[in-house]
Length: 121
Image (cartoon, rainbow, N blue to C red; front, top):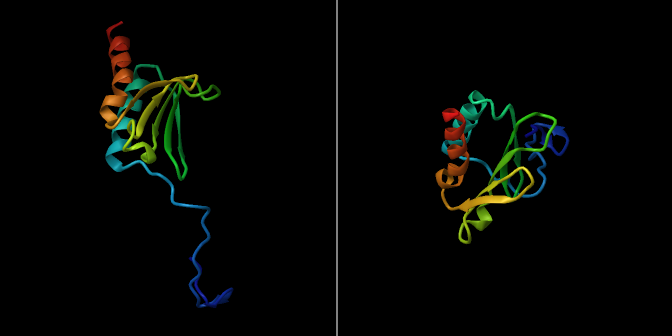
């Protein structure tokens, strides 16, 4: 916000312009769960980088094997699907849907199983 006594005049409070609706966020517990998995995958040598994208429709966490590649895994939160197939989606490297659900732990299960196989090898 900017302070001013009129539009463009010192002393008036003017709302900072925003583009469109609010962004979909990850809640603290959700992000903690995702980053915990990310840390374990980094320790196993599977992932090396990540990115987060927030729009008015979805929040997306993308994990990369190498920074220059397309994401190996994407975890998408889309609240508009909450009452349908579930707001969580796990996407593979080529954009294929690997798992959908209403609860984050269930959607992350295939990645966690892959992590167990990596540790056992």
